[in-house]
Image 1: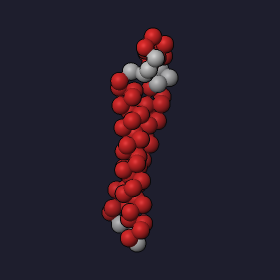
Image 2: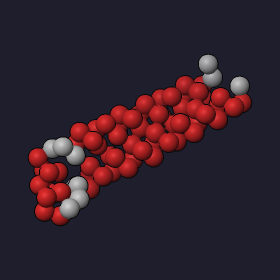
Image 3: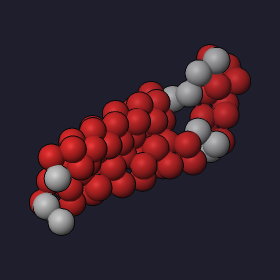
Image 4: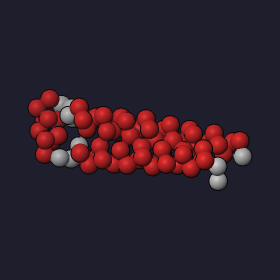
Length: 70
């Protein structure tokens, strides 16, 4: 297995972990209050969710590009 493929898998897993942390954080008491009063989640929760999606996409693209070269 090439180092690029391993790196792509690692980046994909990191993105999924960040996304899970963001989803779990959105269920916290402070985010529920923030969502109740302002209509959206706290900034840190949004960064976890958006960052997790972005990092997961980069990992998926990296992994899929190494599959095409193999």
